[in-house]
Image 1: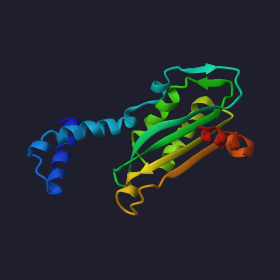
Image 2 (image 1 turned 135 degrees about the horizontal axis):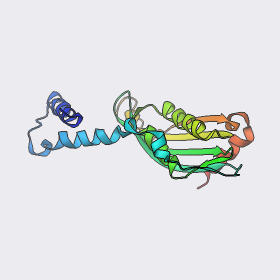
Image 3 (image 1 turned 90 degrees about the vertical axis):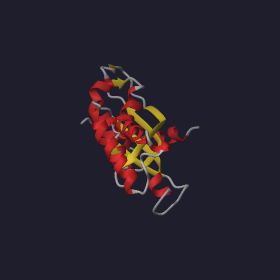
Image 4 (image 1 turned 45 degrees about the vertical axis):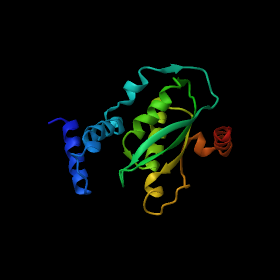
Amino acid sequence: MTNHDILEKITRNLLKEIGENPDREGLLRTPSRVAKSWEFFSKGYRANVHDIINGAIFEEDCSEMIVVRDIEFFSVCEHHLIPFFGRCNVGYIPNKKIIGLSKIPRIVDMFSQRLQVQERLTNQIAETIEEILDPVGVGIVMEGRHLCMQMRGVEKQNSFATTSAMLGQFRKSVETRSEFLSIIRMK
């Protein structure tokens, strides 16, 4: 039995347990669609950062801050298996190495497409960029909307969670941190 088959079976059982009929017309293909969805939502577990980067790290005499902002992300809350989503801002100060700009959103996706909490997700992105580039500093700020807070529990539809990870110069220097925060506020 494949993983897809197992996910289909679990979904059929879930539909029965909540009082639905998985054999009614509207639900006939739902187990297969849900299995495909979970395969996509969890593809970060099967991703490898070195494959994602694919050699796109370059020697460059650049010492100014590089920022990729408003990277859209989605993830699934590990506590409720309900989505959360938002925007991620990534900044780093190179130490003679830069990375292809498209690789940064791919790193965000790799960690987002796993069961997560936003706090860990933020730190994983920062630590990975620090590990692969050895930059002078890294700053990450993520803002997320959590459906587990909006649909159940406290039911606060307009709430956002903001998390940050500041490493190296971003942590040590108020000026560096302020410059980064100023850049990501630009619209």
